[in-house]
Image (spheres, rainbow, N blue to C red):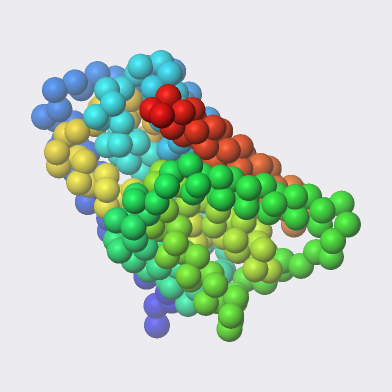
Length: 293
């Protein structure tokens, strides 16, 4: 009988075949079929190396694109979803095979993320952006402090579980719905997912197959849509894909061999990065509000 992990891997493999076939067809008809530059390959390598460590590749890539005016604004979403998909596939397959997280939790959180993205987006985009950014930033900052305190032996450390039950299970699935909805407000899934599961007592590695499989499924489905419309920068996407494949592969193999103490430091570092990102975004929103008033 097939396991849940095998079924998820099979779905990802099937979507990968459809995705690659679509990319081949799109490449033959795309208006700009240039080869990627070395810069684009390096951007793919670096952003996806950190993506496999839990720091999402989309915000960093978007910042680089806008700073250097590499991709037209309207083509950025398609370029990200198409170009980062190969790395997402690598990450999902490595972590699903290497880490045996509870399959019920895996499926429930993936479904929760999809449900949240589908039903909650309309609610989230109407929330006050400044208040949302401040709450998320300060909450993540507190979480980072908790992980640092555990590693410094100022608080008792838990976090060795690869499954959840009862109230923690409900909280985890509920949080996945919220995180799915928050994606409409440009809140990345990886960092908050790692932090929430670790705070619920799970091993820091346990979050990786959950968030990587969710990310791969989302990017493959979105990528297929963008490939059909050709609304992406072909050369840049190829560069992200080539560099990202190797960046994600190296980082994923590194992560699964780290000790739990090092992984806690990694989660703390991700939490600090995410908190800084939220709080800097809140500062920008506050300045925009002042200019309008």
